[in-house]
Amino acid sequence: MIKLIIKYLLYGIAWGCLWFVAIGVAMDLLLPEGLQMLMENFTPHAIGSIIIGIGAATTPIVYEFDRMRRWLQVAIHALVGLGTFFTIGFTQGWLPMESAAAIAFSIISGIIVFIIIWTGFYLYGKHEAKKINEKLKERS
Image 1 (cartoon, rainbow, N blue to C red):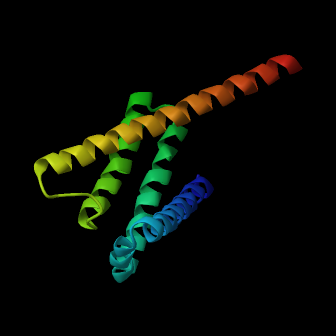
Image 2 (cartoon, rainbow, N blue to C red; image 1 turned 90 degrees about the vertical axis):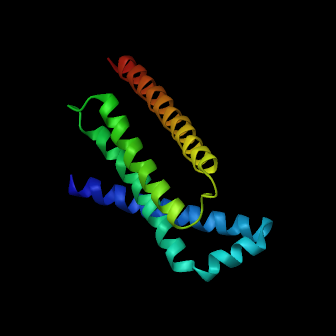
């Protein structure tokens, strides 16, 4: 289990760094003044990206616990992942906080994106399981 936790942790760090660099490149190409703001506070932004990566990539470990109900697994995954994202996003100034409507829009958008990504991974896993089961049937 320790190896699995370390794997998820390193995976999260890698994803956080990858997205930080990708967003930095996009900002450099499309919004150079935004990149300047990012560079002035490079370390907090980099650490924030890594923490979000860890929060997003380590929480799927709950799906390894077979005795836990699926709805609880999804709830834990969503609450920890989105909680990490919103905490860092709002404190770093990545998400708007000018009004209650802007905050609500950010939260609703985040939930919708989570649902879309989760559904995509779920359908992909289901498809892969079907392919594996078909191969197993062919062998027997």
